[in-house]
Image (cartoon, rainbow, N blue to C red; front, side):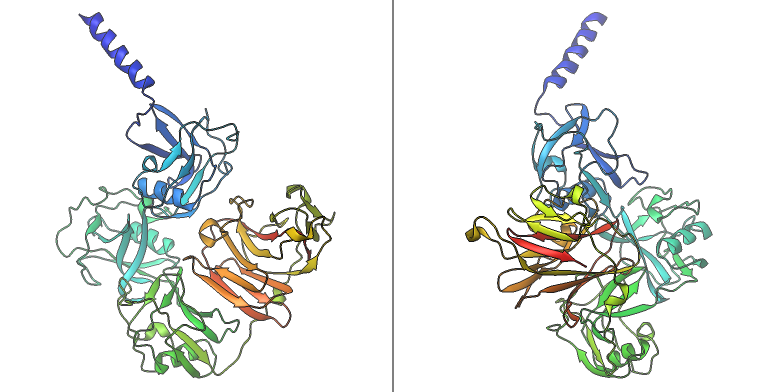
Length: 517
């Protein structure tokens, strides 16, 4: 009898191994990184674990993996085994084609027979934000208030059971708000109808994020009514900037809250509010309070402030009454803008740096000079990145573009180029669509116009031609700005959050030539 049972178990195991269409509970995990929400993607199919070939891997695919793992949203979708090759590596699937809204990567289209192009170091990876984001709300400043978190897209709160100095210190560090001054019990900053997402939090105090601390379990609520955790930190993220005008005293209003930049909704925005901003930035008095962003364009960052009601006498925008940090009443996205009486045109050329490309890393059809300063294309559009990447600081590069070369077939000549920056992990051979979601921040010149695509896939078109392009990067502030270098006229500013090294990025159409300065 015992032998018969053993025989049945072995038969069942063998049939499972032979089941070519089975998926063992949609098993996905990340490997080769200390952060549990970063690493090489490993999948288990038919009881066998392996990697995903990075063929066609993009941010839509990464979004599904991050969601499936409860790790928030992706910040990048690296290719090429950037986190190293896992032990016993074997590609299990390739050509993953997610829309981005699937609940599991196994619900996306994919091929279960990776081809020979999936050689070593062709594994897909992800970098996710983490399972929560933390903000302090309903307090007197950006660095004091009720602890509010978002997990899997749901806003919630933290119970104050076991809440102590160590827990509060992790929140202050995560938000870039300095040391903890005090921690609060019993909903000192008010209660909220949102659900309790974390209970019995027990941090060691050295964690980099609250979600890395021990707790009872997500959505496991043991919290008495009216027992929300609060924090007061010593530091302040009190910062305001004006962007997308090329003038430090005019532009779209952006504020830094909880160590992240965001925008201000224009509902109730008026000259009193604009006056406070101009004074705070030492830009004189307000001459205009933009309520329609036809000039400065709406941002793509989160809306941090709405219903701002300054008297005009405040020294800082953060001293003005406004709606809750946790929610905004901006029903239709329209960000506030300001024009001040003082003109302080930003001069990016003070951060001028030498630019060259690496001839060894370029496509063979690009002809590149030995010093990496001259690039010519003798094929369809080809791309190359700069020889040196940056991971901090301010940088300005300049490129001459108005040159053509003699080609065998002039009828095939492509009168366009793309210039900007690209993340270190992206595949720079990908030409379309070259958008921020894929790690590209670029300006494109066509036959009669130049275009910029923002983080929401909106395309801004401007007629005319640019013969000398300036590219400015402020890594810490997340800015990528383009200038017509003849006269330093501002064209467009991207706002981003960089997570890795970025490189200058150049694409040339057939028959184009560029010289790097």
